[in-house]
Image (cartoon, rainbow, N blue to C red; front, side):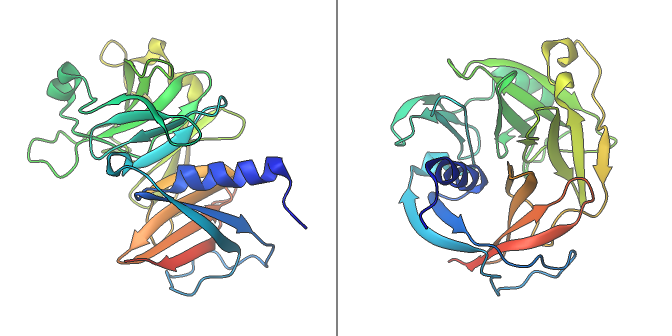
Length: 261
């Protein structure tokens, strides 16, 4: 039986948001038994998802992807750019470098991680100093206007818990922003991602939930929610994996494992 249109769109959006390479992969899913949480990274794919097609995109989009509810896609990359396309990947806006010069000078950010979208706040930009000698070991969530892509503000994350923000995903109810630090998954209140908490005029924000040791063994390159579970893409060598997490318990299962050179 063919998938319903709404389900096809949801699956397409999931993989668009998870992808962090210059090819967007489209998968469809089949139902299989749940795997045991905490399993070591393996090359054996569990067979949950079937590769349907791939689409090449610009190398400038090589970092993170997200979408709004109007059919627009947002990309960032290679290190410090922000881009917008229509649903057919036709670019309609963007620039590089993107991080404002005064923000980069003040906070030493030189990299935007895997981005997310909030219909309330806008395009959410995980901020970090990546592989630099002048880093100050702090992370933040920058916010960009989804229409103009203009920088709006940043919210600093408490450095006692996280040293850099590498990715972000908004919970289905829009109340939590998830990211990770070392082996822990962290959740922040989306209501804190607002001008009333903007840095440096306001203090850092703290996570309201921590799932200890919940990060998959392949790490996290990007994440998105699908059918209530948090899907996280990661890489070990040439093995690219996607794990899903039950954020109520922290238990995880392997969804996809592919060897790609």
